[in-house]
Every structure is written in C-alpha cells, then in structure tokens.
Length: 95
Image (cartoon, rainbow, N blue to C red):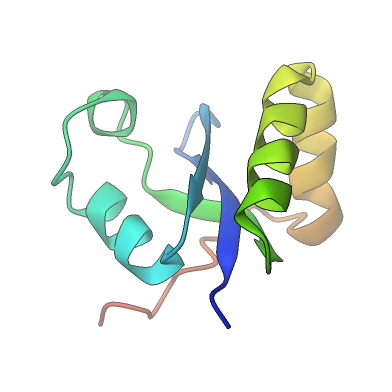
C-alpha cells in the first residue's frame, strides 16, 4: 500500500517549510542536497523536524492545506509536540 507524507522542514533560524510527498526519503534527500531550486534551497531549509503518514493522497493533501493555513505559533506547537528539541529526524538516513 502506498504511503503519503506531510512534512515540516526547518533551518537553524527555524524558518518553516511544509510539503507533501509520496516518497519521504527521496524528497528529504532532494531538500538536503538542494537538487530542486526554490524556497528550501534559498533559505537552507534542510532539517526534517516533523512528519505525518497517510494511506490516502486526499487525506495528506487535506492535512497539508490545513497546517499551511495555521498561524506560525500553532505550527511550532505541532513540531514541539513530536520533536521538542527540533532534532533532524532524518539524521543518519544518508550516511
């Protein structure tokens, strides 16, 4: 069964980027290696700080849209609930 993910990336100054993917490993690799030009490359957003898994792409898209509409403080609370130290959850994936 295919899985879909929403994820939040950050940098040292806690700039936030919210995305959706069907392959979390590949997508995080792309962010970390800046293979796709855009926001995360420009602002050096390379730390995976939060993610959720879904079995339906519709559910994932709905959740991504919901989280993107939130105030920054609510997004920070969401990250804090799973990852209070804001560790890079993908640490060791690409070593």
